[in-house]
Amino acid sequence: MLTMPTVSYEMMLFAFIPSVAVFIFMRSWSLNVGQAMWANARMFIQLIAVGYVLTFVFETNNPILVCVIVVLMIVIATAIAIRPLKEKSSRRYLIALAALAIPGMIILAIVTQLVVDLPRWFEPRFVVPIAGMIFANAMNTVSLAAERYEAELGRAQPYEHARNIAMDAAMIPQINALLAVGLVSLPGMMTGQILSGVEPLVAVKYQIVVMCMIFSSAGLGAIVYLIGMASQAKRPSPAST
Image 1 (tube, helix red, strand yellow):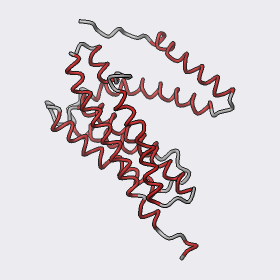
Image 2 (cartoon, rainbow, N blue to C red):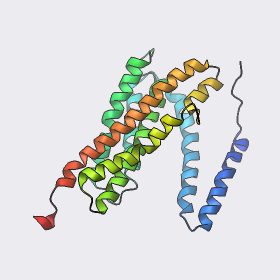
Image 3 (cartoon, rainbow, N blue to C red):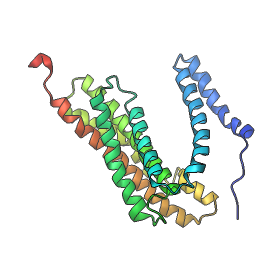
Image 4 (cartoon, helix red, strand yellow):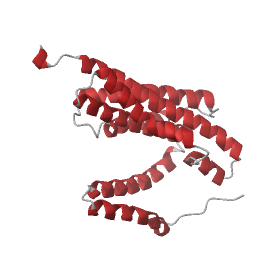
């Protein structure tokens, strides 16, 4: 059986060469290259650290620890989701938190407790990675919806118009991913399973579950956020009262 080759730290650095090219162009175009460099450095540090942490977490028998990790994912994802907004009020944070947590936890429960037959309900080797996929994709979609919604309101658009434009824009990456999967892209989970020796049809079934999970968590997250913003949009401004 073909096994995944080991990647050394030295060889892994070659993967950053194309990123350096991006940095050079961004700098020559007077863009914020510092933020891009910091994001890459932070990604490297975070993933190395989480690799050591997950080695411990995957062996835990403590469901509370798994629940704490999922809660931390939601809290951090919410803070990142509202990062592009000009107005970062506590109300918007709470709406974004609800948009990520409510649909995400429901979908996580459906996938881990009904779709996949886990040996333990909190099995960390499955629950933590699946939760990561759910909340990361929902975070991106909620962030896109929130930013576009804010931009449309800034153009004095009515709530319904701003909501619909924001939803359409936020769902473009998710719909593109569904259209391209299997034809243009082989998703990471499916590819990883195939490389580890899993039969392609088995990997495909898991990937279908993942794609449904990602699409629904992203779409429902954006819907909850935009509905949550409705009351604020229809609230009369101080000048009109």
